[in-house]
Length: 132
Image 1 (cartoon, rainbow, N blue to C red):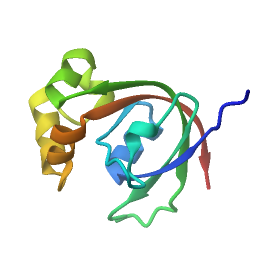
Image 2 (cartoon, rainbow, N blue to C red):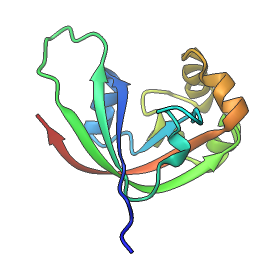
Image 3 (cartoon, rainbow, N blue to C red):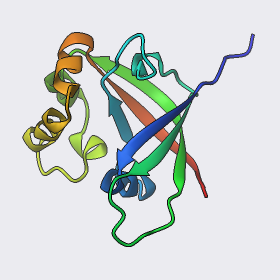
């Protein structure tokens, strides 16, 4: 029986995109929203994650997309639990501490509430290629 591979389109800011491209960010995290296209709790090992850079592009660089494979998925009930088990520098390499990383999550509209309600997932990434 073959496993159904799902393709996920994920938007990230340009700095996060560069961290993914350079291999600094090796774990993607998402707060699921069950019953919507953002039900990230459905990501499975082997699924394909395509990262799209969004936001300002001051140097007008041609946008590419990064294709990765989910190579491990862990579910946590809170950010605090996640950071007890995960190396924050693989998740938020631009943050200097766990507290700074948590502040970043809290700055995204609705994310704090979704994490409180549904938890958060951490996905290990294997970079496949860049799509131009």
